[in-house]
Image (tube, rainbow, N blue to C red; front, side, top):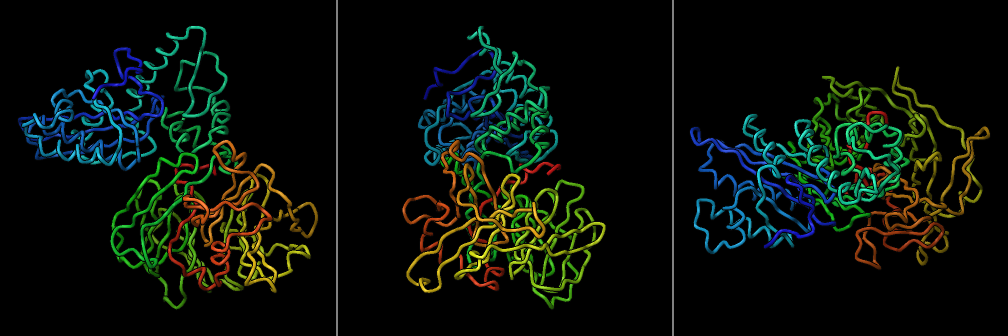
Length: 565
């Protein structure tokens, strides 16, 4: 196995070929104490941070074993990320030669090398190269961190702050190489698929926020956003302060759970697929939940929410980390059916809200107890946030605004329905925030054709220009695409110019498998017949819809939502 001949070499870290991910691994070992640690990092062909890990080991055998273990941990990280084409570098010649020809290797790490070879059959194409220490500084820093802190840690979106100096140093090497090869061009690369005008931007760490926000608005996939955030700390801050998540031009991720019957009886697992980069599916698992029989309550700001009436758990869909609020003190007389966050979990104003038919329970994130407020009226089946307000749709399709500070208040919004909206049989509608519009998506079917003809999805815009406000039918979505899930407790999304990532304008994407393709979702054109499989799923009763298990849904991970959202 040989290194890629197209790599740019400047005495330090080198970038792999386009479409290839580079894995660097290293180990730290102290023979006097028998302690050691490993480090691994994955970057793409532009030097963007993808993932990293470190692991402490207080029973290390020798340096060769630790170097082999570093490779194994790095390959496991690559498998979890879903990398299909990999360039692996280690500064241990012994490990590189052992992987190339394991039949001749009889060292102490032979068993671990065999595990590496087995894992390679799953990963696909990989090349192995021996590199000097100066080309492996980031992996070395990770191993040193694991050793000195005696920790096992993973980073899947943002690099830890202690890596910033070496990451920026490596990127400067790449930038100098590009400028050296093309002296007439001055370039500042922003992400995996976007670029912007620049005046010879050599200062990676301090460009203007306004320019960075322009770049972010052009990003066409979640993975490209990760690459942008992974460049350095100031770029990460710019992504977190992006004015509105609803102006992103990339689609949400498709979440497919690996569970049955709506309960977790061991460790919850799920798969995330990016519609813009379908080959990069990611698999995740979370720590075991106790008690294990938890009911699904919804998804909000990148967290899955579960409860068993007394205990509540929030699981980050991208990292698998768990947040456990204090025990809920309730008489258990009314079933909790819906849960949502009123702001990103990192926001100082964030509250977790749980709904039953008779009460609203709220937990101020970081507090030691819950507050309970009585509720009257019809139960709420969907919440969206639009222009700084919380809008709620109840089970009889009345629209409300909700305020939680300084005290809870729920006020009905006077709305006029178009006459055509009341014809035929309807499912519970969806609310969708689409740019500066609040939309209602309705699935309807003529009563006399219910059993022989699929319904159609219609879209209405809430016109606030008159009082009372009025739902106005939209014949087309123009250059927008919408994303809905059957369970109204799950978030809805919109995306402008979906053709940029391979999608279609004027289409609505639902996370149920398509009968006409091998994709795990279905795309439905507005106003056109809905496939029968999707049509049947959408007419579940109100009671069933709010006691259903976790099914496939659309989601944006929590890191997308800055504290300003």
